[in-house]
Length: 369
Image: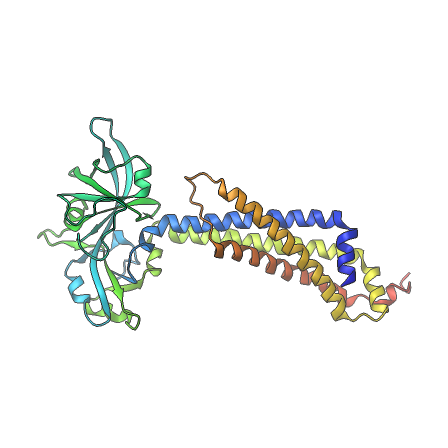
């Protein structure tokens, strides 16, 4: 692979320019990966952290809590073979007024989850107390709300009847629909949520949280005439989830297409410019396989080095993103972005490398002059 290494050293200016372009694309890929993961986490972490395997919804609600209202007795109908745990779950979004004793109240957004106080999905507090054993209208808030200034002992006023929820604890319960989650007991949730009770006073819930055994079938929903979805499938009903993930996937897809086109254009021009060198190699007995392998090695070295540099730059920039931005980097997302870029570049370079096989060895001997 002498020619590939020689070109990288002799024509270092051209390859440095191309490497810079690839590194910038890699950096952008890392930042987009962090934003994609961050948006998903900010929209669904409240569901991710539920200790459940499945969620049951009203048929036709498409995993959207605001469209799903089921009778609370659906929990009893779902219990049986294959169901290890089942508990009612209410979910609703509110604008809550924060009462802090004398100071001017401010408005905070809250995704209010209603659960039975001692159910298996009741949150475990990291500060203060939990729902079990608390007084009337308790609420356990997420760390995000605590970061906004809400603390144990404050009151959150929600609902049309201005019900005051007493903040009794803080827990790492995440967000839902980009709104901080807070947990209250189910009776309080029914009281403050419009449509959560029938005219006869019968309580309704948004969903039933289920923990199914590994060998259980989702057909357990037939017992109560409801749709049973996996926890991951239920993400689709989170506000904005489908649009955000589709948009980020398209942007990342276009970035890979652009990177493939850029690499293809560069190496096509480079192949044309060193046509005589390639022809001379073939005239000296080098096979098409050898010459193609030499060119692909050159492409691979450039892509790997530039991608590593760009990825490191992306990690540095990602570390200084403002805390308000939904940005989360994981090992899988960073590695995936880098590998995808290298693969896209290699595929794009095939357009240029393909021209090598058509080079006539006689060109190097001057027959075409």
